[in-house]
Image (spheres, rainbow, N blue to C red):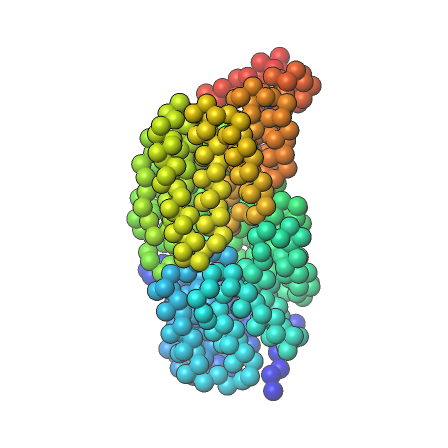
Length: 533
């Protein structure tokens, strides 16, 4: 009969180095590897207990290549450890909040599940865990179908083994992954957070608890609740690049840009040291986004200059392919769109990757740039390239990203209609895009939309000589994406054009406070300085 031994009874292991590789390359372990404190009870040999706990800690910090290597090493040392194959299967699945898996990933995962079953788990609990990961890979539905199937089995494990705190922690991230992006009650996320807060009372140094609390609270109305976890996670597992990055999810939600920069600088450095290029790019995207909000364009451009070389080092099967490709496309698009460099955006070179949602970023930026630099025909032509990407994603059962690309297309269509002189139609299209974007949530792969649809709606209204409704939309945009340079600057300009001197001065002050130390040259900053005189 299963008897769970919690960290209160059996002293938790401070995880020590075991030979491991990240991104399929060897890297030396540090004398006192700091990944947090985890204990996952198994029937495996006592000689591999610490190594197994370390591998679980790597899973909890989404360090998948290293986790796969660690579990594989456990399986070699103890061939009867069926749970080592369970760990490999979770590592192969990768980020539970990521996109639809490739057929190759699904095949590899199913083979690993078969290995777990063939190894012959010695306890009913272990067989239940293996059944859960088997459910994750079952069928051919979209990512949410797989996530819901896995969450359902994990829920049954939590109910069956109420003292198994690892089950509660793994179930929490399963709830986050299974949550409907359109559910504005955040029911599953709040359920996950309640469970995690309960376990945290007895395991404050558990990396998964702090990590998954951040994901559970990574939504505009909930973000403030995630600040304690955000400030703890990097201290719990400072040797895990993702642990250094994750706090910036909450910092981004509340507009704490310098905190986000500091967090992602540390994460990128750790990822580079660990030879995890996709994780490095992911941190660089968040860092770029934050720099641009502060008007620190030189720093953002420096990061952009490094992205392509790093992308070449991203290896297939790393568990972070989408994050790497997405970041490599997003960084240059952000640099031109956030600065209003429309001609540069229009001339961006199209990218091709295994991820249509990443390729769509550049095409979206090109259309916006063309439309806003007076190249209506080029914008109209470019629109035709976006629709097929949404269809491709839909055919892959990736409803979420298909919807995101469809929103980008509507947004770009709105500005294209404006460029063609069809302003009313453009406003209507952009309003629909903004409402659609508000009805869903961003993916954790990105700090925010490449260019928020409601902000672009407000800019079109202002461009069309409608400053009062433009101001309303800018202020709405800031409730969802606080502290954005373009929204604050746009609100300042709209208020001034609408004759609201008090609001114009307020937003001018906000912009100047935001951009202390900015790179010279942004015209909005010069306008704010004049207003404050």
